[in-house]
Every structure is written in structure tokens, then in C-alpha cells.
Image (tube, rainbow, N blue to C red; front, top):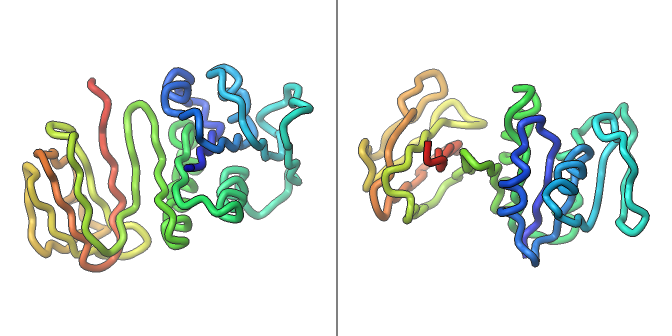
Length: 208
């Protein structure tokens, strides 16, 4: 099973949450994420938060972990730590982008944390899928014509090879100060090999 974390972005798409959550997913709601889960008709397994953004009633038949408002980590980060302790090796965050940019950026940092724990982690919305690619090879099929962007994350530069894309490169040094990885286009069977460093991959999957 995978773990779904429903975060509390004000731009969370309820219809997308409804379609993205599978019947066998383990679902954790981060604070206002419970509001979106209710609207989507999703029953969570666990609710965690300091409840500064969700002030409605909480269910009595679902485990709730209340956090102190004055804490070091975000509600979503605490949810991710609970998922790690439960042994999940795939964690998907819904409602983790949009709204305040600092909150969105914190969730990008969460991707790096989870990837360092050998977890397949992603931020997903109706418009985007966001991953962190560490050293190794990756194949992306079924996305032909969609755009994607690559940026070093957690490092100043990342050396990678991109094949079967509109802008292929070999042993290319992506640098954090240069936006050379913006807006590439998938061809069938696109292959990306990260030789050193880490690449933040933003896939634009919306039809618009």
C-alpha cells in the first residue's frame, strides 16, 4: 500500500483528491486536509494537526493526533514522519502546492527528506506531478507531448542525461543559478539518468 497525505493548501482540488485516492490507500489528513477529505468523500485513517486552519468538528471514530501550535515541524512533515514509522515506501502529498509559496517550498523540502529515506515521494495535483530524482536511471512513458522541467535541488549542480525528449542532453550540468532545464517536452519512452546530485522534476500533466 501507499500512503496519501492530504495537506491544507487553499488551492486544493477536491475533485482531483476524490479521483486520486485509491480504495487501498492509507490516508493521513494534515489539519485542514481533513476538510478537503470530507468534501471529497474520503475517510482518512489518521488526522494530524494543531488545528489552526481547521476548526470544525473532528470524528470520534478516527484516530486524531493533536499537535502544539508552537512546534518545529509543519503538520505535513509530522504526517510524513508517521507514514515512515508505519513502514510505507511510497508517500504522495495531495494539496501540498498553491497558496502561500513558503508552504509549497516547505513541501518541496519534504520531498528531499523523504527521498533521503529511500521513499518514493511526490507532490501531485490536477496540473502537476513533482518528484525528486536522485542518482540512477528513470523511464517516463505515456507522457508524450507533456512538458517537464528539471532543476537541481539541495545542490548547486546536477549532472544528468536526458534521452527521447525535445531537448536531449548528455552528461549535462544543470546549475541552480541557470534555468536551462525549464520546459522540455516528453517523447515516448523518455529516459533520464542522474549521474550526480539531485534533480527536482516538475511534470505538467494538465491538458490546458
